[in-house]
Length: 321
Ligand code: SAM
Image 1 (tube, rainbow, N blue to C red):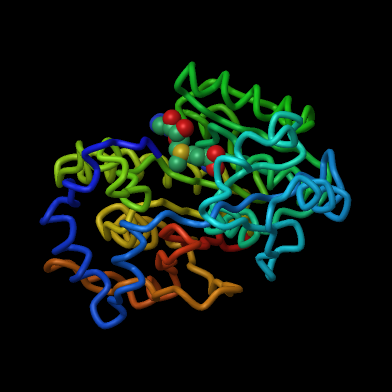
Image 2: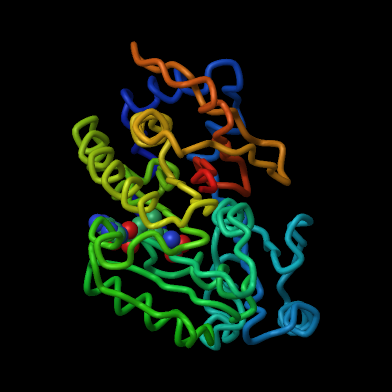
């Protein structure tokens, strides 16, 4: 986050806040509102491709960091907000032994649960935090592909994978919507962490995070997300699973995108998602005059707090033949 000297004068767009109140309904709370104003704890995952959690934690503790385990992920820890810059500047980040990302981001690979030996694709991969997590869960056994169309971000992805010791990942600079035409339905698991309006990253200390927010942008994102989710689904083999996630609250980018796929594809089913945290809300079945299939309730919206960013998750299965 930038430290804008005028940050205290900034506030989030009124229309965004009004929509948020309608999305959250009864679960709206001060904790959620505070999450846009207060600094968050900084979390990281020990990268088992290169390091062991015990040894890594000893080194960080020895350097004065106050670590807390996430509790639900053996490799996940966090430090208080005032130690964020100490953590981000730590040499273990440069060595690729730890990867700093929000605990909500760590849920994505965990819920998709790729198995060693499977054929897996990360369809919108840069900068690669979730690709690295998938690689660690697969223990580098199997096939993992990572797709990213934007050149600068593609290089960042490659650099992060190199630093994280994930040389077995194959990288492709490509629009994800073109993937099924090239691969056919061959993947056991697909992660689609879709490009989105980024509402979960809004913070008053960083006006750039929300300066360009608009309903028009949400509609543009939805259009791209619909193309990508169709491509992800077409790339799955029968019985395969895709995790769709965004860091937006907007139902247009979440429930509506998932509902269209469920309605268009008879072989598409939503699966129950077991989350190891309590701050979540079920998917909405109605929004601004639209209604979605009842199964969309199985989606999950992680609610932000002093540790978690918001994240929307939908676990999708293609029926076995
Ligand atoms: N999963 C990543 C991680 O955890 O590090 C973050 C992914 S970010 C939310 C979405 C990514 O999708 C961005 O890097 C963006 O450049 C990329 N993207 C944008 N348009 C795309 C497209 N047509 N196909 C595939 N990826 C796309």
